[in-house]
Length: 434
Image 1 (cartoon, rainbow, N blue to C red):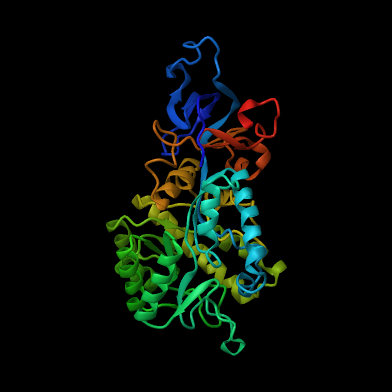
Image 2 (tube, one colour):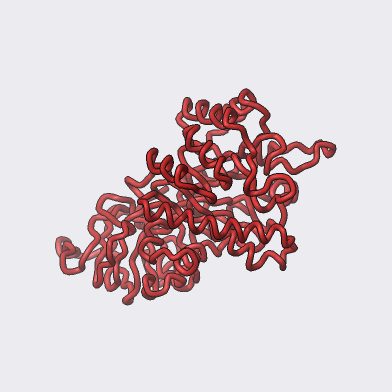
């Protein structure tokens, strides 16, 4: 991905650096060659434009708003869209159409202020090629950490197509039965070129008749085989973990991250902290399923399961935050009731429902996501030397975090010092948007 050359100076706004430190009022952000050179009080910012006869510094006036890191979607499904039932995930559209829609979703994510994202699994091998296309500036989108087809035990949550149809599931998931098949699945993913292996240790409220949120979808032996094989190839492993036993199995088997972590008891929390394993709750999905599920045909039994998951998951998040654990935010956008483009409602939900402070929520939604991606040395916060992935937002985000939900409030979405989206990018008078 190209980086800017030259200088950019953003002033006249409060600065949230993404680390959780208090906001800096009347701040300045200086970018040089696509990286952050200074972030802090405007009074201490190095003077620019005085060492050359013509000042070519691109200047952005934040208009009294907020200067903050680009948001990071820590569990994105670019290949999901208009999903209302599980079968929509794998047999509704051909791979060609899914690929085109994924490119649209990537562009949408960037336009919503998400400058980076971590794949939570995809159909076929689309995210690996989507990452390549984004990095080569073929299409706009967030910096992407790629996952691929997922792994689930036979008869588990993702094994929904009846055997008599003889459809198979390998477009979205490898169905494994035993450690040997688990190892084979990982080796196929190695060949695909993915970075994260996504598994399904547990069920979900979406499947109450067979694999609800208290059941297991993989054995410990299968999970351990996945980890050993993946780590041998320098890949990381994560898993859809709701049931308490599934969380414990994942942490004991050596998982590198946990998705959801819903029913987390004290033993799970201790294991999580001992190994410093990050978690992406993906919890807003539960609230939105409860609120909007009926209009999309969800049964009362499914909605009740999501309500239980919502309440337990919120308490688990509070536990992890209080204990100093690492969390990223995002998850499961692309369903009918969580369409692409509404990602930032996750941040509002964490403030209004879960009870996180706006500063903690923004830290999870920026630096926490970068840590989950394994790229926190260069992404996730506005600190000298890091890549200049920046949002300039109209208004005070700490006073009203829901400002991030509306694209019209984004003055500039900046990647590597280049304005890629936002109101300034659409202004022909603004040279930085070219």
